[in-house]
Image 1: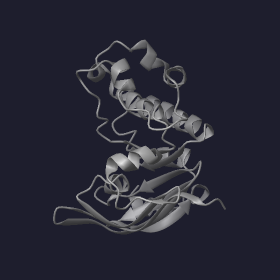
Image 2: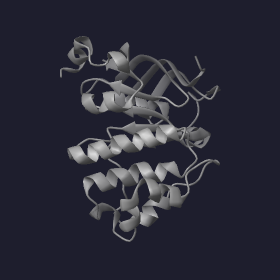
Image 3: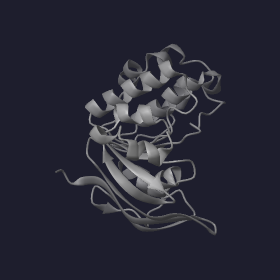
Length: 232
């Protein structure tokens, strides 16, 4: 098996005095789509933020492409080739779609060109002059994903990309993730929608109380045990 692109060992994280992660252990290999599944409050979003160095305090080990990042600030981590797309999307209301799209800097070669981004997301080309927050929820999610594809990042951390979206848009987001995988991107995905997750992922890590309690191959993801973990 290929060496992991991202390796997380005994990752612990705090917000102030609140201890959220209690020793997360998992890995993601090049070209995989891997999900973190679990109930609300399990620590999934905090895990993505901790990988990016965006928590108050963290300990353990996070290596990306053999570089230990646990003591690096978030801007240095991003420049290694990791991009984070938050659940709240972070669209700037004062900027147009086109301006939002080109806002993140290119941090290394290999990112998609604007033409390639528009090929994946033709609706963004059509709405280029619209104010970012005038878009529908689905269009805002497309914009949030699209703008990190230009940066040259190879590992995408996506937090709840289907939250609150209509089923047809969820299906479209799934198709986009499939195309990104074909292009060589590696994706770590936090997701509550079990049925969406099994449609896009290779493996699933089940998170409870800030720890990984199981790893399930996608071929086994319809088992009653996994659904029991998630309460679905």
